[in-house]
Image (cartoon, rainbow, N blue to C red; front, side, top):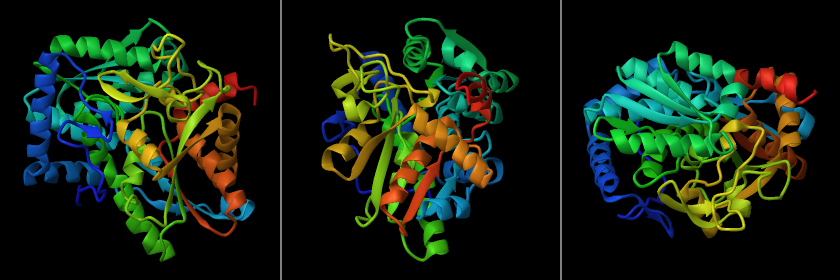
Length: 399
């Protein structure tokens, strides 16, 4: 199983995609991130490292995940809708792909602990799982609101042996979890590695995450051609920080005839604090050590972000997504809470697949797309399953 990215768009030597990315850290952490980059580049070319990673992806995580033709959904909406079933991976989402890679990289560097943040808990579960199989300690930072909202995933992390650090500052969600995890990491970087949970953060992490997640797009392209004998007209993925989307898009970036769509959460509305649509409403800014499009308040500080999907409520977005938006290769659009919830139920009741609320944003957009592209082929990255969201949806949405 090759792990090479087919995309021609890679960061420059300083970690920038155009004007976005980079490394805005203190000198000690910059030096450590240079070590991480060197270790990653060495590992990338090491046959033993790749053999171990590929073994775990195939026999432990269950790759390749299938591409499924959603016959009932297609019949109702008039376009051929296919799903890349990342929800079938071990731990229930795409997050296991980069988590295994990061854990193996940390072990290769002689680290004894992984430090990570999580919103919906999928990254936390995946990191806790990877830490267990590789043999590392694990601290997971999670906002108090998300701890309550995503209790099933919190319980999973505890069972897997992770230490859960509940963050009670600010909005008590993903941004604050990242803040606190970074502070902890800055004190422990000599023995721990910060296992970033999306295609964000200082260089080299956006590049590292894309490398490990590119397996999604590579598989999907081959599988779609095998099933349909043509490439899809449209490829859709949800975007918070952007890991599942950047992995999916990497398989199709060079195919100019394939339209790519990144779906951001509009949440409750267009006002600051009501959504987490960083590309749609953000301005250039610095967040957590990198430059990106950033939701900002009237003083230019990172604004509160909101989405019904905990994994999407981040005020920034990966630097490569910012660049793909700027050059016009990917169209970024929005889906609100109500539309996502409706898609959650629609996929569940028509196909017997309960999606994560994050993935429901992509499904909702695909259904909109189908109405205006009758008879065309749409491929959706179903980034995770909805087990974690069932209690919240049933109790909070009055549906």
